[in-house]
Length: 367
Image (cartoon, rainbow, N blue to C red; front, side, top):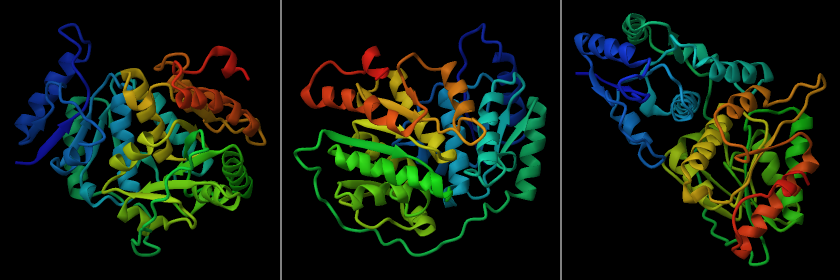
């Protein structure tokens, strides 16, 4: 029998979404589906999420959206964008009868307008407003299939073999999560400038190791300034995006989740540059780890570069609004200007280097 994976957690007997979930379970069972995570108590980690995707034939997200739910949903969308063969033909339904998913959809709609999400999320994350509609939409999606993401290979997967360690005089590495598709010259110039800033201040530059867009520009800026640059990527994305030149270290990983994990492990700070769905996915992972008190994120600053356009619109405005309602103060810092990024990450990185108490102080955030 086909297997469907439910997301969401039942929060006790008084959970307002309990009755809706019970109705959904009944309809899915009656419709011939086996159900994973029916009680909402299965744990998903970066190490096992691809396995959960492989073993499932479809996905349903329930009302009461949390950061964890949004991370899983955006991960599936990114998988569709990057032609993850383990997702081929597997529909994803979001039951949004309580409108809790609306801020998440607003982020994706905004990024489509900004040009970093080329696909219409509505074609891949199929929103419905009743349990009955879940069954109808599943049936239609299985018959119709999912649209082509419009991505094509530009080469073969040929990862470099480089293992140069971080220089001893560096204070650590900053991971830059950003777009591999945005080609606006002004954004690329900012990416190169950040790479140079990191190199000149003895900070390693870690990225998703894509050759195109801002991702390639950041690596270029660091390498051209004599900096140490490292990154991680997976074979099927390398075939789509290529690899930048000059990497000092490269970690090949089998999927986007373990790729993310090794980048987090090897970084002491994080900069969120303008990006698309993949950048949202990565930021949500950082915020979830922060909330969990995960040791991988202990004391590591996260800076969102909310670059303003000519009309004064912040690139990440809708995402910052979403996170402000779901994260704790101090989980991230917003930089509106490029020159504000370094003062926001340096103090926390130096504390990690010297073994001082982790975390940014309020006066350091204002620097």
